[in-house]
Length: 379
Ligand SMILES: Cc1ncc(COP(=O)(O)O)c(C=O)c1O
Image (cartoon, rainbow, N blue to C red):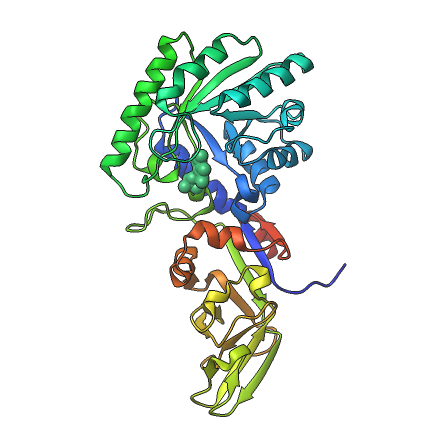
C-alpha cells in the first residue's frame, strides 16, 4: 500500500442519498430530476456521484461540457446525459457517439448537429434554451421562430426539451423570477403551437425547486442541494453536507511572544504560542484569502489560521488545544464532534459562494468515498 500525504476529502454518499431524497420529496411524482454533476460534481467526483444518483433513480444527469459527458460514458454510465453548456465546433461526432443530449440556442449549432447526425445516420436529442432574462446562454424569444423552423425542417434533430435559467432564484418570491417564468411559459406555448411536444420543460435549479416555482415544468435541475450546500442565504434547509476536507498536523512548535509567522510576517505571536503546520495550501484549494481569517477544527475545537496561507502549507494557532500532538486530525471543512466548518462559513470569509469552495478543492487532493454503513463497519 502506498503511504500518502494525509490531506484528503471525504465524500459521504449516504448524505448525498439523503439530499437526493429531500429533493425528490419536494416534487410531484410526474416531475423528473436532472441531477447536475458538472465540474466533477462540484468537486465531489462526477463518476462516483453519478453512479449513486443513477441507483437512486435520477432521470438525467447534467454536465457542462462534452468532455464531462464523455468521462461519465467511459465509466459505464448509461443514463441520459444533457450537456448544459452547448458545445464547440468539431465536437458533434463525439456528442453523437457518446449519446449525449445537447442544449442548443443558435441556428448555426443546429446546422452542425444536423450534418453530423445525417452523416452518422442517427438522431440528435436537443433541449432548446430560451433566454428569458439571464442574459447568458439561450435564444431570445424574438428569435424563437427561426430556430423552431429549423427543427421543423429536420429529420435528425429531436426537440426533447425546452428550458430556461433563472437569474435570481436564490432570492425567494422575487418578482423577476415570476416575470422570467411567465415569459418562459409563453415561449413554451409558442413551441407547442408550432407543433412540437417536447418531453421536458424545465427551469428550476435547487433554489427554484425548493421555492416550488416549477408550475408548468416537469423536470428540475438541482445541483448544490445534492451536495448539501444551502440554496438560500437567509435560511437553512435540512440538507446534509457531503464533503469534508481533512488533514493532520505535520509539525508543531512553541514560539515565544513577538515571533512573526509565515510569508510577509502578517501574524505575530502575542503570547507564548503553539503553532501547527498542516500540509495543505492554496495549491490544494485552501484559498489564500483565508490567511489570518480561516478557521479549522482540532480535537473538536475551533482554531484560527495564523499568517499567510502558503502553496503547500498553512499554520494554525493551536495554543488553546490541550495535549495537542503532531498527527492530530484537522478538519478544514466539515464537522468534528459538535463543531462544524460549513462551506457557507468558509465562503463568507473569502467573499464567495459555497459552489466555489467545493469546486476549488484541487485535483491534488484525493477523494475518499464512504457510506454510513461502511463508516459503522469501520468503527
Ligand atoms: C443551467 C443550470 N441548471 C442548473 C444548475 C444547478 O444550479 P444549483 O447548483 O444552484 O442547483 C446550474 C448550475 O450552475 C446551471 O448552470
